[in-house]
Image (cartoon, rainbow, N blue to C red; front, side, top):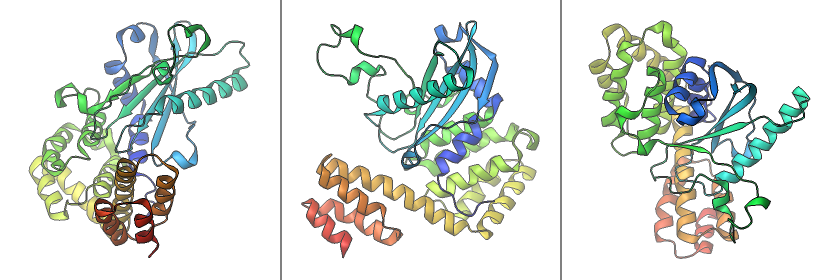
Length: 328
């Protein structure tokens, strides 16, 4: 087991949707009807490729599926944005990744035509996604008149905040993960956890395995600052069977003994960084000075300093004042 968790969002997302049963059930429930009419879900293949640059891995995760679309092989590209706020440039990111997929496909298959790529976007930030799905919505000028001269595509958006808990469909494991993703940034997450965990009652160890529970526990403790081991134990005891509850608590204790405090602090540090970056951008705008501040913030490794900085942002009247605080 790795002692260092580089990105808990990425780990849980990939473990869940690299499972073919989870992926197929998700697509079956959430692909648009016109798309479902032409894809063959039984032909679904999990690809191991990732197209995200190293400097963006803290913000995005991705999965690539190969699938028959009509009579030809095509792709479904699943992008998970795990920032705490919407990215207005996600169309551009998707286009860059689609180009990489096409280049790889041409290199491997030697085809003369490009395969169809269906882009999907999963978002779970606390703010509702307000952007439009079509790429052309990013462009200024007489877009309709110039339609013949510009590329365009539409991604399929899954904003978890827009789904009620009962509308979240799929396998039990995928539903649990999506519900946790949905509420992870909410202040009352701990109160939501019993209902989410109750879904695990019907799962056998064979269906999940210890690795799944381990990833789930890591994710929760890495991203929830105010949950205590005692609270977690109470939730597990009240919602799961004695056998399964005992197994999870044994695993949780094992994780604590193998470095829980370390990955808890790393998860807290990552969450603070994302929140601070967002606060700085909102208060001082998307300027070069603001980007300089964010670069300096990313170099801070001490959680207490990050917490102090979070408070300073509220009172700081200028970027230089903030920089001075960081450098002292």
